[in-house]
Image 1 (cartoon, rainbow, N blue to C red):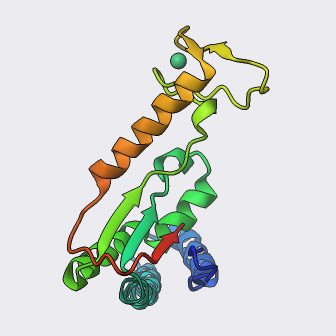
Image 2: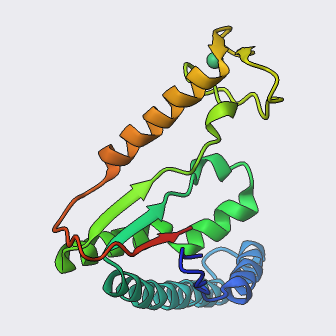
Image 3: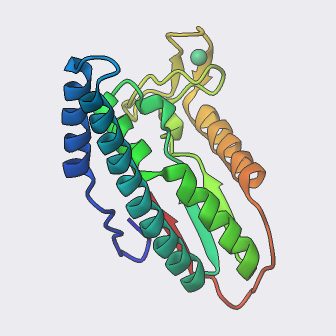
Length: 192
Ligand SMILES: [Zn+2]
């Protein structure tokens, strides 16, 4: 999803993915070193290549479009490691080739003199302990201070939020890569 409301539809690999998994099950049943097993192995490799080609083509086209149409490119980083618990989701994300897309956008931005940034996923600043990062969840507005369940620190609600915002801001600067700036255009694109 981009900030201008446009949605990028990624190709659907689920059919190919299903095929691969079916073949892999077949492979597991087949006799080692047999001709049939070898044939299945090659079929699986070909299917993997087909997914990779489709993905590469899609990512190239999308990154070219995004970078050529915008002066500033902001990518919201996906917390992939945090999603590993959900195996299905992790699989989908790796298929989407997030890192590849990021690398392509960065390279093209540099070439065209765009501003390229990666920001971390937005964490609700009042719901997270500044000291240890523990997420205690939504607080009722009447609660002005909270004792962290994890590290035991007493946090003032507003102070904690302010410190978290500052931390996120520093993160932005750290992750940003400035190339040439055109002050006339301020259009930006946000993807996730
Ligand atoms: Zn804490």
